[in-house]
Image (cartoon, rainbow over all chains, first blue to last red; front, side, top):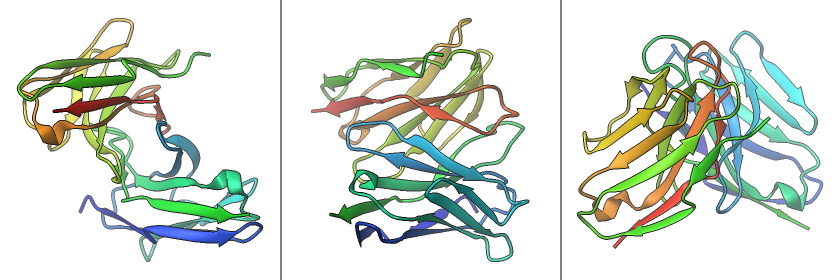
Length: 115
Length: 113
């Protein structure tokens, strides 16, 4: 019930291409789905997030697509750049109550953008 | 606005010892959560503190304990260290249990030998 499954484990994309990372969740109580970007030796940085009342959210080159019925969401990085090379984590949480905001993370995707 | 800070950056301890890690939350944030990130894995929730009280705990044994102070900074204490406790320990702050966004600090890298 608490799992978030992320794929692929690693991804290599050419500069200028589209990077796509997918996640699936089980707990229908989740109502917040963020993506974090983490560089080696650093803490995760909040990249973009979505709530289940919308199907898509776009911020610059980053887009989240959300499919509530399938319990799936994905991150699209358009015009991928070498500086986007990092590990990306999807996560899920619910607001309010004991343990609110407990983020449940996926396993991570190591993204490499080749120049 | 000051971001989340953690100290120390790195720490090496021996099995059986005790360790205290520290976190200062982002300005205006009263909620701190702690996570353990093993190498190559996603962060795992340890516990959360809201207004100096524990507000939820993950699947970690009681030798993992914490505190939150009136200025909302926080400590994570781990007793009887085991080799498997070697990980990056992250704290994240947010502006209360009714908000969503959590912002992470740079982490403390703990190595247990």
